[in-house]
Amino acid sequence: MACEYCEMIQKGELVLFQDKEIAVMLHPRPALKGHVMVVPKEHYAIMEQIPHEVIAKMMVHASRTSLVLFEQLKAQGANVLIQNGIAAGQTIPHTVIQVLPRYGGDGISLTWDPQEASENDLKEMEIKLKEESQHMNIQKEVVQQHPIEERKEQPRKDQNDQEENYLIKHLRRVP
Ligand SMILES: [Zn+2]
Image 1 (cartoon, rainbow, N blue to C red):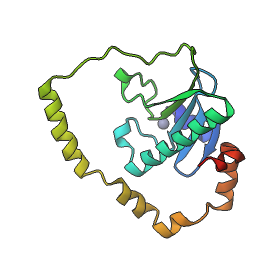
Image 2 (cartoon, rainbow, N blue to C red):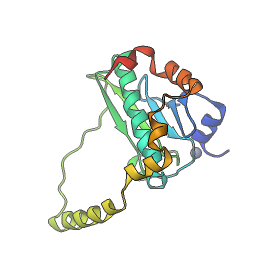
Image 3 (cartoon, rainbow, N blue to C red):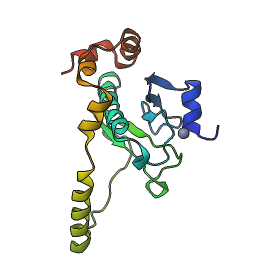
Image 4 (tube, rainbow, N blue to C red):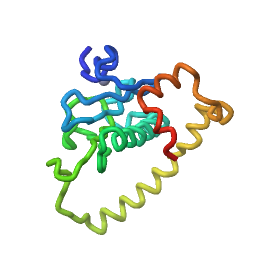
């Protein structure tokens, strides 16, 4: 298999948690301890190929992972990052959300010098974004996939156990 992340998922390598669609795993070459990736099990080379309901779910996992990093590794902050495309630093053509625990003085730099776009470009972007928003109905897609009655149910036992290991019991008390 050509893709490193697909292979890791198949072998269960560095996987902390997984369900039908998503795996949460340690980064094979971590920037610092606790560097985690939220990975769709399906191979999507770029972010735009990921179905809306899957990327929405990935973001929820990233948020919960961030909580675990705060609680378990005493992180002081977290970066939630997608490197979408080679120019953005993507090296493996399988889109992931990276969650990095951050500490004051940890030496990782994500700073830049501010640069402004032209008025014209901004106006065109505004129009395009409004157009795009017409086709963005996440709520509808999620509800169609997981009807409301089903979403109200408690997670199934096996799923619950897996989640318990990963999310550490006391996290359930976090509002
Ligand atoms: Zn892959």
